[in-house]
Image 1 (spheres, rainbow, N blue to C red):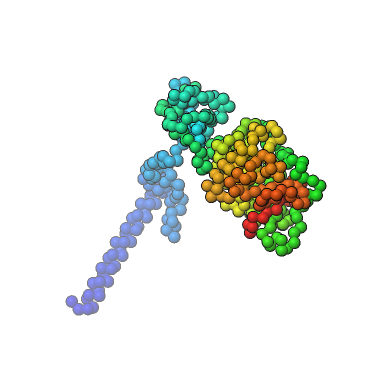
Image 2 (image 1 turned 45 degrees about the vertical axis):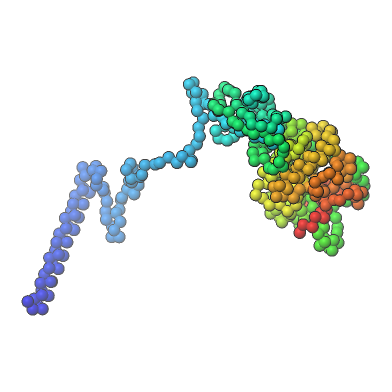
Length: 436
């Protein structure tokens, strides 16, 4: 066949294909139009109703949410066990029954029992009782979910929670090893012992006016930030304040502009009456506000510990509250009296010194610097300074020049200071710690 014949043959084949394609398109178009005009066809779930193919290929009038009605479109949901909520059980009467867990630990010759529910929350308001094998039964008289047993011989013990209406108690006892001596390390579960101020009688637990002895103040004290020469300020002498909830809302940016270099912030206290560990409600607000303003920060805790175990608890609370926040100044134990009515006000110097040492050792073992706050009179008469474990000394003495002859690293020179950004009186301090 010549080349001319081949070209004619190919042309005929292409024409035939075009005719077939046109016929197919025409048949499908008529079929689509018939369905659109047939009411019966509109009820057919396998067809698309009242749809027009537009020039861009989209279907006009399509139900774009139709897939939501298709039960087979989505994969069946698989429950995520990690996100499931734990629900209380119910008894034969349909009443809710909370499952309980007993936690037991020891610091030194004691057993500390915490009762928590299946969500990990402390259970309060119930008079639970536990039985310690070979010792006896102990009752949660104050109904706070904690039972403290002291003066226990070192060794292994089993602790069982007795039956309580409305609760499912553990079927088996828990084991606890009673330690023979305190190790001055942070108590892991101390946060379970920390209370909010809403749970206590503040007037009984937190004394606002803690005055130093009259011999430690006179009319020569300054009531403003010290007006130091430039070379003194550059010689590592810093000016600061110490604050707590009693100072209320603080404008930290204004305080910084006034020339305040550092702030020692109260994070908490032990109740003067109950002995509970209580967080200062302004702690985190003051901590974050001061740091944001560029003010160096330290902490203090007002103690009412009566023994070294309680001192370790207080130090542990400080470390727990601080978390991963960094501070520049030490953590101080405020070892003042509570007006004569505090649970620790009658301690002798030896006991106070042991408490101060236990607190400071625990703080240092947690990687922080530690110190003791007290007045000149208390350092002389209520503490054995020569037996203290080399803490930083924060002296309270309100006059133009301290009469205290011992070493001190920080000096609180008035409790009647005035600083813009703080309403009312504020404690003022000078630091010789050399913290830049």
